[in-house]
Length: 440
Ligand code: B12
Image (cartoon, rainbow, N blue to C red; front, side):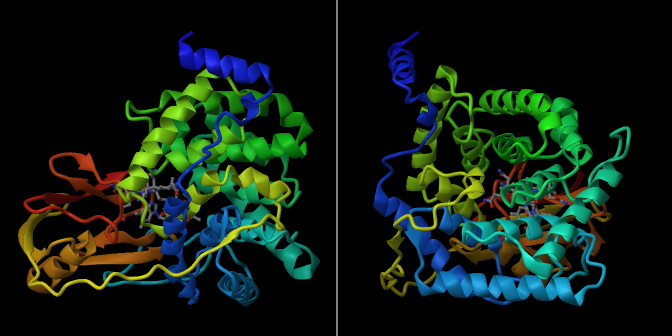
């Protein structure tokens, strides 16, 4: 045992090990800057731009947005209640299909409904009354449908994903709503036979979400018959996440680290190995913050809780009286008007016939979305997107829509998948970006 190990052992002896995965003493200006990036998004109150995850992230953070926060929750309530009441048989998630040109079928998916329930709980509300009961029944029905899609012999897949399945169970759990053992059983099976989760592209995020759901069930004792299985699965999740730590310290990648830390923080089984891994992850995360890796509001919303030593499991009994620092809008430094410098980016699509390859010129620090727009204006390139909580999701390229369990993957040539979406990724001069239709 090295020096660090010895220190952690000592802390454990003092009963402090339970907090060993907490990310404390982060520069408060860094945290505030993250929060400030959420503020402009809180002015976007149209149903397709509302994002319950932003509200949850802020309420579990050390920051508050004053009157904006209440207004945002109000808009969320109007939008979600309306969707519920206007659709008699509210079901079936928005599929990953679209027309070319932006399309926006704005019916909340299972995961979005779950996030909305988390948002209510973040405001210390329990779903209740007739409307509340309908929300709960709806989410339970979603989960039952997904259970059916997975099938008796577990050969099928949920229509959405195991990530959303975990989110659904977690949301009901923090509202103390019990789901059937067989629903929890499907998620347990998926974790026990991990190839089901490996098939997805982001096993760490999915494992972390499943783990958060199991932690909540364990703490709330909602499915006592599944307790032993759930305990073993939780340990497995923790081990898998620790094994997925990269040499720099991230769990999976930089963007799965916040959820992974939420899970590890909520862990009831701290170990020395866990403490060491968390310290390393903290260092990696702080370095990413310095490099401004966190600009996407959804990503910030998953990160803010851990910088306040909180996880979604804390929504079992949230502290709505905890003092939080009021966010002021960022002061803008006036940019000097300069002649924009241009870069060249090559766009490549081989998954269609005839294949496509074209170079476009865009101003420095343009997004990939700007590149796609430019290519569409100046060549035969066509694309379609769908709004999502993470931003515009690329659904079709050259008229070819991604089918069920397929997606248009974004890669930097020759073969590096991008870690950001089209709105956030900023290509460098000379880069080739490939859009590739793949299964998941
Ligand atoms: C499941 C999942 C997928 C599935 C989605 C299909 C499905 N039916 O579920 C697949 C494998 C297809 C996928 C693809 C991609 N994903 Co993804 N995905 C996730 C995951 C695990 C859960 C998303 C979810 O269900 N959220 C909950 C629901 C309620 O929210 P929602 O907005 O309604 O969900 C939809 C969107 O999230 C959308 N979606 C999924 N991924 C992404 C990524 C981006 C950038 C956008 C705009 C939309 C989007 O699909 C969801 C279902 O419709 C998250 C993990 C996380 N920590 O959030 C990563 C995550 C969001 N994905 C990520 C990335 C990078 C991608 C890709 C860009 C990878 C690539 N190189 O191609 C592509 C998207 C490319 C495109 N066409 O625009 C990153 C985003 C990081 C960031 N900086 O924003 C995350 C955080 C994973 C990670 N740790 O790196 N993803």
